Amino acid sequence: MQEILFFNADGLRLHGILHLPETEKPPLIIGVHGLLSNGDSPKQKALAEGCTRMGLAYFRFDHRGCGKSQGEFAGVTGFQGRLNDLAAAVDTLSKRDGIGDVKGLFGSSFGGAVVLSMAADLDIMTIVTLAAPVRLSSINAPGSYETEPRLSGIKKGQLDFDISDRLHLVHSVLVCHGDADTVVPYENALKIYEAAREPKKLLRLPNGDHQVSDSVHQKTFMENSLQWLGRAK
Image (tube, rainbow, N blue to C red):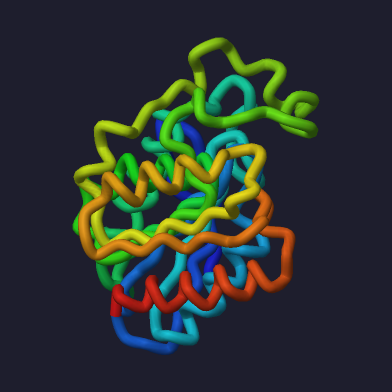
């Protein structure tokens, strides 16, 4: 079952979809999308379907300025704003009847950094990141990122972040990354994995790109991610 939910963050109305299994008070996984994406990404839809099959609820949402959520992208997009969006989602769903506590987080790319930064402040049992950067300066900007119209209006410093001092607080994390990623280099995965506490696992996708475009890599990522997120049960 799917349910559309709206919630507020810093005065903006955000849109999300809650996937519910046929289980009483299921533990909840929240997914966080990348910088230029939204909650309708194929990876998140597939994770939501897989989680509900395991008896887990899954919530995927559009950050401010993205998808069906309020806000003009260039004006409202920033690292702190995305942290606030996730905090608002956690608060909203924690008050909802019929589901259990937030026990897992998934974050893709920029969303992975958001998840890792906030995870230590929550009672999280399982985390999955995909192609997550440690700091803004570790992100390259080739191809479409240089010409992306939505980024042209971003003010200097608006996206700045560095979560390196938070990583030692993170545990129970599966770090997934393609070792040929030209947007967020694979070295970011090594830094996250080395700094995080046990239990942890590093999933290296050989010759994998940032988008995980290879079908074999997609299957490997999905199988490993669902197995790791299943720790929330």
